[in-house]
Length: 123
Image 1 (tube, rainbow, N blue to C red):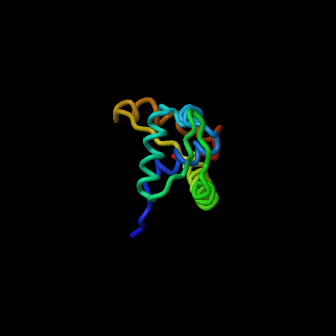
Image 2: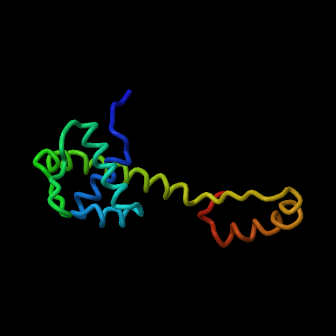
Image 3: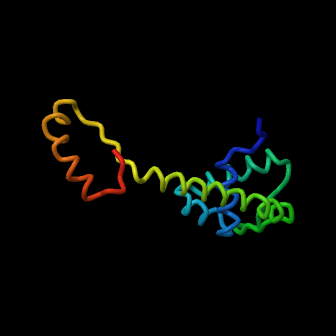
């Protein structure tokens, strides 16, 4: 079994490091700056190491934070790439849920024409 910190803490850490701000990281992640701060704190507690220097409203990576970022960023990018590839494959499948009567009386007669105009989709 893997022993990893929660993924949402890693994502918040990477965003804060990339943007240099909890506020801008929060905007990028659609969460509050406070939520970013809490996630970073949870990650720091999990690691037992400070990742940022907090000076007034500015943040700066510590040496440990910079080293950690350099190691985890490629892994996060690999997860993103793999996920994008799987989603792209799933993007060619059309799933339809309809009431049986509607499907039998209206939809079935139109699917063949739709499939001819969209040959890359699977039903």
